[in-house]
Image (cartoon, rainbow, N blue to C red; front, side):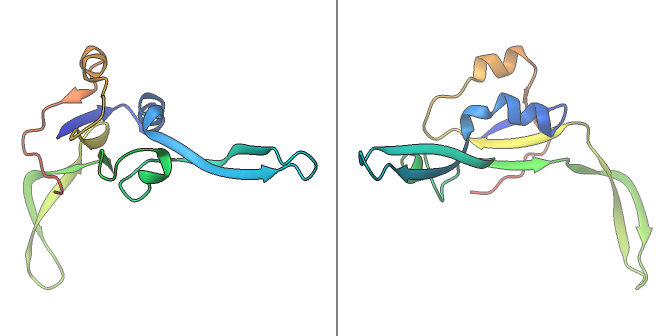
Length: 126
């Protein structure tokens, strides 16, 4: 698993632009029969659910936008029912996990720019 941390969501979308796409609108000229494809709508991440649409093998990569993560502070509180609840605080940055099974990734560039991190306690889906 590759763990990336960005300053914010906008920076993440700029750096990972190659992992994003947009819906395609197809129009056909009635006279010539010429077909035109235009990308429309908001950009979204290519995922295993639509990899085939974009010429990728299913599961070529999987990307999870974690966003702002929270970690235990070591302090606790008590809820309305008397249960002890661990307090958490937000970690800095905007986090993304990327499964590197196949495909090319700009790991060297991410290292140079400080985006690649090694979390203390990684938790990810399989």
